[in-house]
Image 1: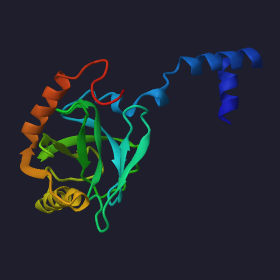
Image 2 (image 1 turned 90 degrees about the horizontal axis):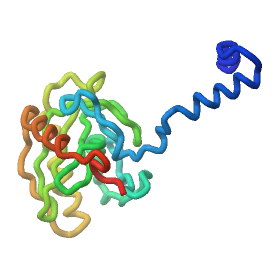
Image 3 (image 1 turned 30 degrees about the vertical axis):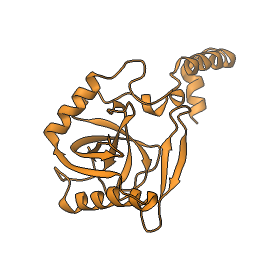
Image 4 (image 1 turned 60 degrees about the horizontal axis):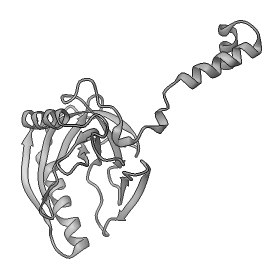
Length: 208
């Protein structure tokens, strides 16, 4: 039925309508060609951010976006009995200290599909060191429908700490992860503002 509506709205003959429709489609941006790491951030960043979901809550496979291709690829299988306590991904166009996009845990009990983009608000930041390098992770909650909490609960932080400090130790036979604490929302937003200010316009984070 939509096709009939398009033809009537374009007017003229059938051929002319098809030509005009093709012109409209060709003029549309190729959203599918945008590298996930270079997706635009919210106009309200850093108070509100767009997050890209790589791993759903409860996931036992570590997926990562391939910086070269933009495809979601299997990085590794988690050790037995481990699973992600919260949905996990990254903040497109927001660089971390190592040049990758800043990691994010999305705190919600609602099921989130991988490769989805969701609007979130930062509520904290886990300060970590992994193998001697900074590996901070933003804590964020969906802006609508996900949670009414203003900050992560002690139980959530305990689950995240246990997961992050144990699963790599289990996999490698040693513990390279240092838990340095959790920043509150105001300081987190300040750090995000600095990261956005230092982002390159041509390649803000990750990607080829």
